[in-house]
Each structure stands twice: as C-alpha cells, then as structure tokens.
Amino acid sequence: MIRYNKIRKMDIANGPGVRVSIFLQGCTFHCPDCFNPETHDFAGGQEFTTATMNQLLQLCSADHIKGLSILGGEPMHPKNIAGTLEIAKAFKQNFPHKTLWVWTGFLYENIKERQIFDYIDVLVDGLFDKKLANPMLQYRGSSNQRLIDIPATLKAQEVVMWQGN
Image (cartoon, rainbow, N blue to C red; front, side, top):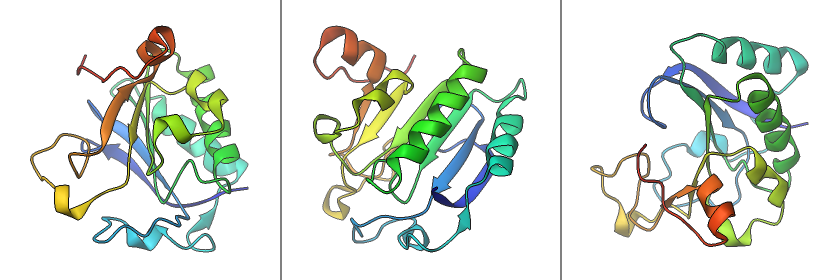
C-alpha cells in the first residue's frame, strides 16, 4: 500500500473552494525548488491504512468541503498509482458531486493507467519548472503545467483545459 506525508483538513490553495488535500509520499522527479521535498522518499511519511481512508472520507463528508485534492510526492508514480486509484474510486463513490483534483509531474498523454481518469475532474500535469515559475498562477507553480478538464478531455478525445467552472 501507499504512504502519505500529510492530510490537510481545510485547504484553499489546491483547487477551488475549501477542500481536503492528501499529500502522497514518494517521487522520483526531484524538481529543483520543489515545494514539497519532504515527500520525495517512498519510505517516509506514514502508511495509508483503512483507518486513513475512513478519516479521509469523513473529512470530505462535511458540507463545506468542495472536493479532494491528491498531491505529492507523485500520485501517478507506478508505486503510488494503485493507491491513488483506490482513493479516487472511494471518494467518487461516496461523493459523486464533489470534485477530485490530482497533481502529477507526468504529462496526461504519458499516464499509462487510464482507469484513473474515470474519477478525476481536473488533472494538473507537468513537472514544476523553476525557470517558468510564477506565483500569480492559480493552482500550479509554473506556466508549463496544465489544468486539464478530464471529463471534457475524454469526451472530446483531445486535451481540453479547465475553464474555472
């Protein structure tokens, strides 16, 4: 099973509205100036257990919570993808009208586990690039990163950017 670094009960920085965020543990990208280097070690953090899943879903059940954000570390890394999929599935089964956002250094086109897209509303993809960093960007650190509307992308069969709805 996967490991996680922390859970934020009320996060307003990682997606629209007040959200719950979970930061998964483990990343091999090691982007210079990563905002979360403590999540790089796959052996760090804490084990994600059934109790963790129950806590996460309980936090998401509050009426003021608009959705769940999964960050890292790297949620789409081969060591984490099965756990990311399990969290995404459980979240959407319990809260079909709340949004699920996922951040990854991988590009959408290169993610092999396509089933995950059945559950994600917005994917923020691409490696953080400190040469393209801009603190004024919403929900991302550098201008090369894309905010992809996954349901619209699947329907159009081409990448569709999130328009902020």
